[in-house]
Length: 145
Ligand code: CA2
Image 1 (cartoon, rainbow, N blue to C red):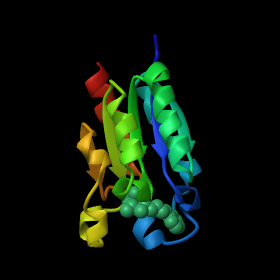
Image 2 (tube, rainbow, N blue to C red):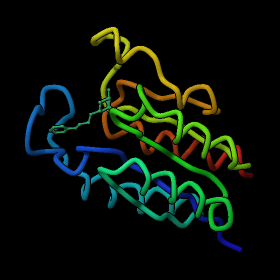
Image 3 (spheres, rainbow, N blue to C red):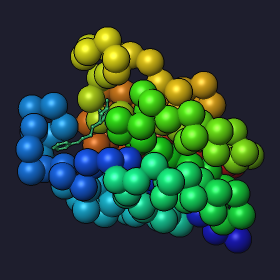
């Protein structure tokens, strides 16, 4: 049976491609979704791509993943640095979790250097732009095989 991977995106990522291209690139989130679907299909995985500006909606997607997903790719955006709620939800998910950041958060402000989600993530990819999502899918595929 085809395994499904949830790809979860946090606040303001819906604005990708519209502002700050020097930090986040020129691609839109829709471009990333398309690329993820293509790579996942090649890996034999199905994807559910989701973005929300609301912390609780991301928590609920992680809860849904408990029954519906084999693995999670998550860019929690600003919630990376603040959200114990998303961390706790991820701790209740049994499959592999890969955390992705478009920018190299360690090259940026000190408040971006700490991630609550990294306390649960099985892998972390930062600074590889949108390619980071595709690398995360490859890693999940390896972990799920
Ligand atoms: O580098 C990343 O992927 C981040 O998760 C992006 C977050 C930031 O808070 C994290 O520290 C690192 C911010 C996403 C906001 O994206 C925008 C895109 C275009 C215009 C405005 C915001």
